[in-house]
Length: 350
Image (cartoon, rainbow, N blue to C red; front, side, top):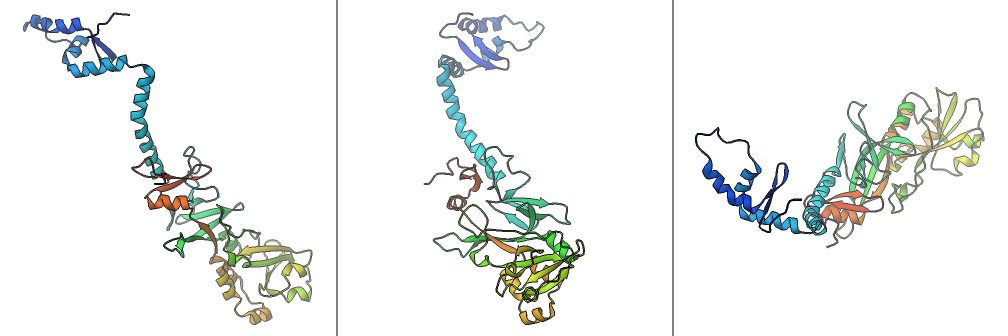
């Protein structure tokens, strides 16, 4: 390795580190005096040309950096670049975790786009179980949420209901079983299934409002050739023929006891479908007429189902605090995290 003097200079050129010995710098002016105007003209730049063009302070800086131990130099570089990286990461997640729109509905945290969920590294923009599928197969995009293996159409969401100055409000999402409605419109029972949803319990899971716990449309699907008992028929509001499977569908009158399953023939199968309390009451408002004439038509049934059923979720204190700072919420697998556009300390409790 060539020896260097204490006054030698080093510079970063296009081809790497350039060494400018003191003796080269001293001879540069002499060389310049020897250049004749009649010569072939200047050639390509050399290290000597580069050395002659650099100010003394830059030479001193490079020499000082070379004399710094590697570990210390690495620490200095890291301390200068780490805040920039944090700010860049925050802004990336801030943009990625912005509320997103599908159709006419804008979804905030804890909801996220199903197509991007799990693709953003260790941070997700929503909580598992709150992924929205934006169905582009319809004439306009239709948001759907998966429950127990079936996609339910999102009809609307309501944020911060009953909010006060001291307490965050609660939120509702209204879901519609569009598959069941489509089948009922064609007198088919193919999509009928049970959906059991727990009452909301202040957890991460969606849940029914407490006063919706007993609001279901209850059906018994029985073989067409079966002759039910009169005790069973007395609890039935309407009955329908299922054109696709040879069964008959019976709708229970929600307002009487004993429960339908206590008197239901063993050959029948029970189905409970969540519905809006208000719309169920409207459908059954003329109970005596419905009982006598069994006249709740398919169209009335599908209209009640089209109103949807509400589920509740609450905004966590951590996300509410984040949003008050102007941030966007994310989820790292165990807790809510916060991302702001211009601040790396968005999760600070200050």
